[in-house]
Amino acid sequence: MTLNDTAPVALVTGGSSGLGRELVLSLAGRGWTVVTDGRRAERLAELADPGIVTVPGDLTDADHRAALRRELQGLGRLDLLVHNAGTLGPSPLPRLETVTVDQLQQVWRPNIGAPLVLTGELLPLLVASGGILMAVTSDAAVEHYPGWGLYGASKAALEHVVLIYAAENPGLTAYAVDPGDLRTEMHQAAFPGEDISDRPLPETAVPHLLALVDRRPPSGRYRAAEVDLTPAEPVR
Ligand SMILES: NC(=O)c1ccc[n+]([C@@H]2O[C@H](COP(=O)([O-])OP(=O)(O)OC[C@H]3O[C@@H](n4cnc5c(N)ncnc54)[C@H](OP(=O)(O)O)[C@@H]3O)[C@@H](O)[C@H]2O)c1
Image (tube, rainbow, N blue to C red):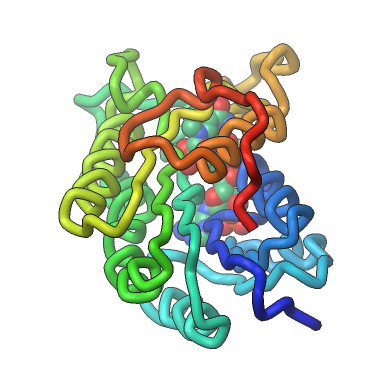
């Protein structure tokens, strides 16, 4: 593999499917070097591109996070950290009074525990690069839909975590981004047995995420669909 040592570097978690996969491919297409992960090594192997480094593993595993950090230290910079990986939890979605502590851990460890700790582990690299910290969250972080409490509360916590990281580190810009409904494996699990073919494909959200990177508005919470797509000078 030949990596461009002057290219900006991103870590996008959860590149093995859905929105993460499309974001990884788009960033690599723009000349970024992109590190990505996911537990399904066979799906990551499909991301054959000279600018993509795949590190299969589970983000809740400290050894896997250490492998990601080693990879990024080797690249010498981290311009963009995207916490995209996430889990929905039980399907069908549970009412809150049925949620067990085990289920809480199954959702909160990947959705909030791992991003919180991984950001801390990568903070020196990210701050040194004057980087962008982005979390893919959800409208369920701020709306109160029956059944979405376990997942939605994890996304609300994730929004706080990335925005507080920015408050604590003035060199850092952080975005909590609601991508909107997307036709992915997770969305299908949220609506088991339903036809979700009317939902937009995940690649439709990517230009909005990239517009945040290009334009670098103030840290905050954004709805992807509302991010202006008027061309800006791409960040290279
Ligand atoms: N689709 C929607 O309508 C929608 C709406 C709002 C927000 N979102 C958010 O968008 C993000 C992407 O989801 P998606 O819709 O694209 O779903 P997806 O296709 O199911 O993708 C989820 C990704 O997260 C990875 N992942 C999950 N747990 C992981 C772990 N412990 N360690 C490493 N990787 C892990 C999965 O990889 P492996 O399975 O290979 O580990 C996969 O690559 C999520 O944060 C989701 O909450 C989605």
